[in-house]
Length: 87
Image 1 (cartoon, rainbow, N blue to C red):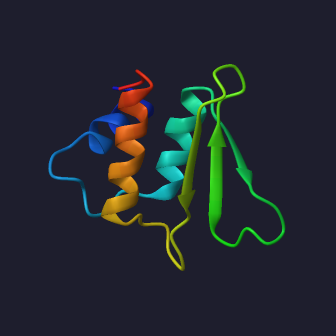
Image 2 (tube, rainbow, N blue to C red):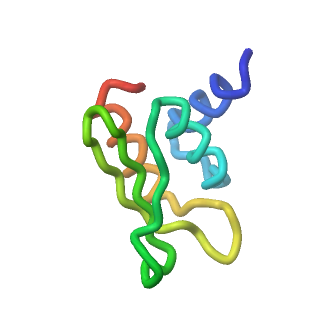
């Protein structure tokens, strides 16, 4: 199984995994063609993932100080990916 497949399997687990990492979400989004952008110098922890062709945008807050995402953020990402036909 490829690394991205393992990450997608974990992302789609029910219940939401308590240890899903933002670095893994970055890989998933890049796999589907999304680019990551901070919203400027004052963006703080806000990150935008956007798809240059479809113009789809996902806005999230990066976890800090660690890399583990909150359940609500993971749920938001899963919903977004499902709505756009990726998973």
